[in-house]
Length: 191
Image (cartoon, rainbow, N blue to C red; front, top):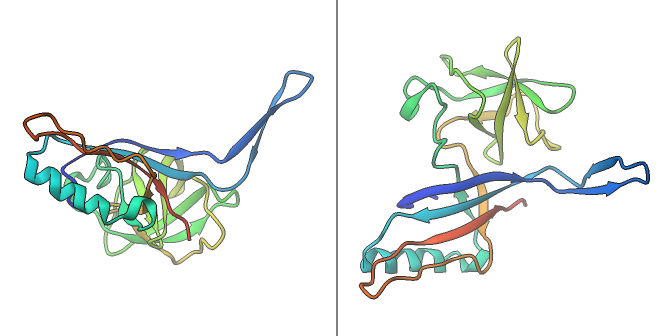
């Protein structure tokens, strides 16, 4: 969330799966769709005026009706490109047969990606690099969804995704001095 004076304390995938145990004792897992991102945010200690500003900003999101662009505050740029130094965006030039890997052609330079880096594809989907496969391919999670195509843009500058507030998760409690912190949870909003 742009301008949030704090940190992303959690930014993880929520797997949409069902597990069932067979009589043999084997557990089977079935996917019910691509995993979606969830996040938890916590601000630094804020003075009373800042608290009221953030209460208003969060009120404007209407308890989950309005979406906002979110990213992991710890992964605004690739690990080997602090503050984006020398990093360039690109486009998908290859998709693995399993829809769990991509190759990237960089725009006028090279960005070095590491396991743990995030990439935003076509301004709609967010993926984490989970492996370096060689031959210029990167393993990613979640797997690519329907509609991912060679030629779509790859953004590595604050790679994010649309999210909504988890209803009831906002906490703006303060002490008697009016100082406090803001916490809330968010979940990916797919359209």
